[in-house]
Length: 275
Ligand code: NAD
Image (tube, rainbow, N blue to C red; front, side):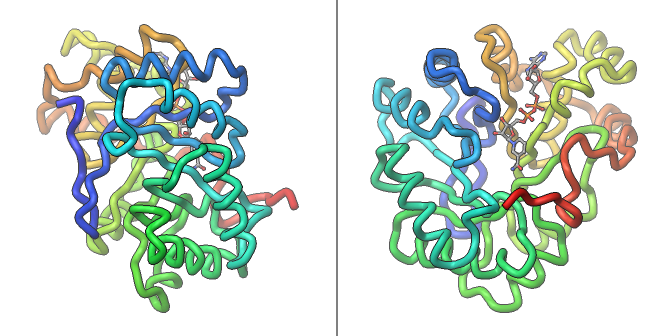
């Protein structure tokens, strides 16, 4: 159901559905979108220092009737703040903006070369200090994860990566599964660009649901956590109605076959970092 969670490597439960809030910059629009989502039953919010809306995330949560401990809040350290000491400082700033005592999940936003291992070491320290409940990274390829796994004490529990029917990420997902690293899909709808795919529209007609619901259900059946973004109440609702139908194996295979390794975001191996 709507409140389904994935059990992570340390036993913590992470909701399979969260609201992504990237590019929500208008204060009122952001507060309204989050309030709508929480009222509909969303229990996770995915933000980042880079999104400049951590204050609004905290405010919307404080004003909602959902207890803080029933929510799962993710934020991320931006590229210019990486390294051990900088990450600890960046976390403090995020916590202040959110106005919370702890964050559920803190992620390295992108693997900045020569820094991402130290960044993750700081995340481990935050975990030891119980300032975060779950450790993780984002946009890490298998080779980045292997580098971290070689020296860390607490393995990353989540990797948030770009994934949608045009970028199914099967090898990386298999590696993560083997390492007990849960996968979250960012741009689960391919920034909305996969919604016009002919095959997906045909499947949506067949199941009598929307293309967005087909894609999101496909992620769930692949055991992938989703954080679709919308500021439109009807879409926020639609994106949460994923449990009254099930895709057959044949449909799953048709969707898997749409893969063309197409990224709408940057490739972590040649990200242009703006310092
Ligand atoms: P998305 O795939 O969630 O697509 C969002 C767009 O799709 C919206 O702008 C909207 O126009 C459209 N849309 C949403 N629901 C719809 C529906 N039901 N019907 C029709 N159109 C619909 O893309 P995103 O915003 O890039 O990604 C989602 C979240 O992932 C972000 O908000 C952010 O939290 C996270 N993210 C993380 C990273 C990272 O580097 N870790 C990068 C990008 C995004």
